[in-house]
Length: 59
Image 1 (cartoon, one colour):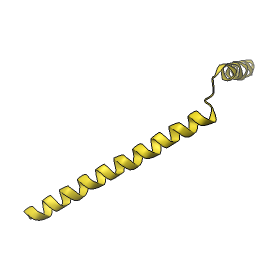
Image 2 (cartoon, one colour):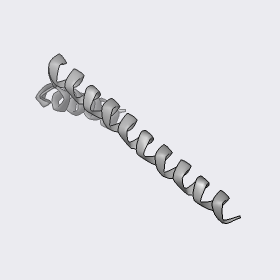
Image 3 (cartoon, one colour):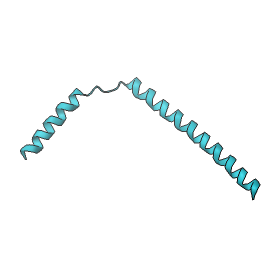
Image 4 (cartoon, rainbow, N blue to C red):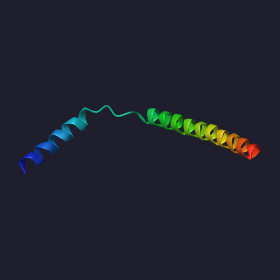
């Protein structure tokens, strides 16, 4: 039981050392991830369509 209490205390102490990002940083990062995801999905969709058209043209 003593080790569990020590672990919780140490975990709490480490969490107090963390430098949490600001709201602006989080929003900016989310925008980058969403835009990157949409662009990546569009490129993969285009490649898929082109490959499908190529395979249909061959067969």
